[in-house]
Amino acid sequence: MSGGYFEYQQYRISQIADDVQLLINNNSSAELNSYGEAIGRNYPPEVIERFKEAVVALKTAFVYAQRIDWLVSDDDGVNSFLIRLEQELKQLNSKEHDNDIF
Image (cartoon, helix red, strand yellow):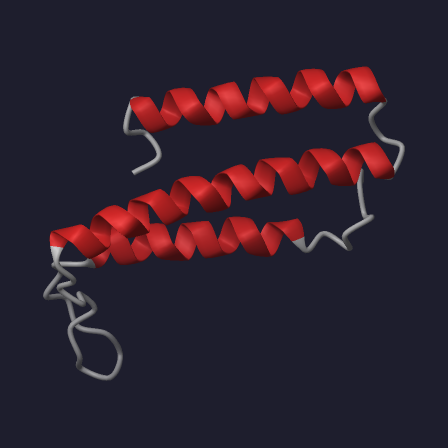
């Protein structure tokens, strides 16, 4: 397994992004949770837009943390760090524009 400098905590950032995405996806859901309450929170559109921005920011933060982790753990060199960082940010950016992220 690669990395480890951050003790793999960067995956918490990714999990938070996924959790915010779930809030977006379920915002208007009338489905009930185990307590009998609707899982949808019915936040207004302007809040959901901010949540979407947060998902992008969190996913970007994960990419940076992951790439830095691999660099300082000596799993990547400087050149591969720069190349992989650029590739992953471009991939993330293209998903954002294709709405795959939401």
